Image 1 (cartoon, rainbow, N blue to C red):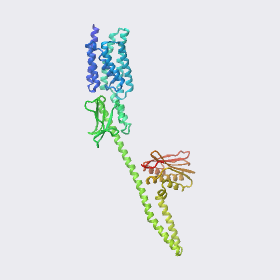
Image 2: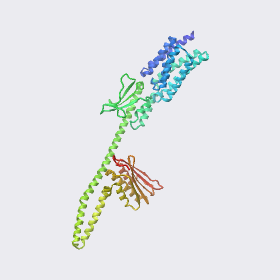
Image 3: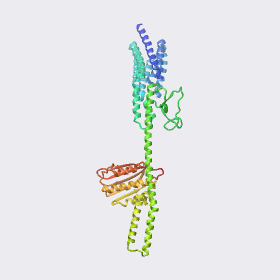
Image 4: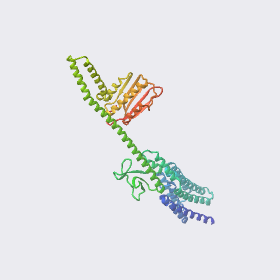
Length: 501
């Protein structure tokens, strides 16, 4: 009789402990309600013998869905539903085999949930897993006690009471004081800090928080709305919906919104920490975007300078052709008329004629340097071939592009001319090859030789080439092993409408 009284007292104490754990966890929403339901059904079973196992349904529900109180896995929902159904069935048809089956299902589901979950669910999963396995263990022990006649009823019942009460206390304490919240935030900050853009921010938050349905909306002032990564408006959930919205502000200015499971961020510390981490991440993204924008502006400014220089070269060439060259040609023509009339004088006229011819030649050479005729009239292919003919070694030329914008043609011709000139000065090469072609969205210009190699990319000549190519938004790649041969490659984004190949 004393044993019955002890067991009844312990049962009441267990019910009180579970309800107290639920009341202490009210701020955590669904989990607290499950604890309260477990406590209520437990006390109901202490009063009515037919309801003695009704608590198993909500208890299994608690173990398999902690810490959110929800599960999106169908098989877990099936196990939970089975636990509720079996707890009712066993009230009328006590069957030890059903108890063993339930215990095995719960243990298997708990292990699988632990192995598959991430974020807070994974960090909180250790105590939940231990609680579920402990519950499954005492269920199996209770069933075997009945099936095998061990006659250890009191010990099994006390162990069962201890497991249920202990699980309630441990889970409630873990919700309130557990370190998994801080660990989640630490991992989240590290993950967000490693990212250089906002792309995939929603995915990183989903992984860290264990909510695959979480979405991120960015505030766009021009549209006065939150938009997702695709530019589509984010629909905010209603007040009483299962999902909720956590807004992220910066000194009162809207920045973003997180739409997620209502139970996910029930912990105020997690709400505040996630909002702060996301705000910092988006601030960093905005700063990087601003830097990229400034770099883009600088690149465009450099390109405009090059284009202005090309325009000025063309203007100078036109003025020389229309002015000084025309007047020298007129002077040479007049001198020819004088010579034809036999008015050669003392020979000074012949010297003047020679000087005029030399001046014409010098001016023509200068004009061609300012704006090569071959480039103007024949395009890049003709200009490169003309340039190649002025060197004392063989220069093979392969140009597979058509006409390009004048600044780009000028930059490529400059690259080829300077690169081959460097070969002539320093490489000791017997042969050189120039290739200009296309590769997807790039113009690729290559100058390679069979010289001594060992070219220094930081030398003044190659630095000049680098600067010129970078003004067109391109990149210079130098490959020059010491055992011989040098390859200089210019990669420049193709302008829109440029011919391919």
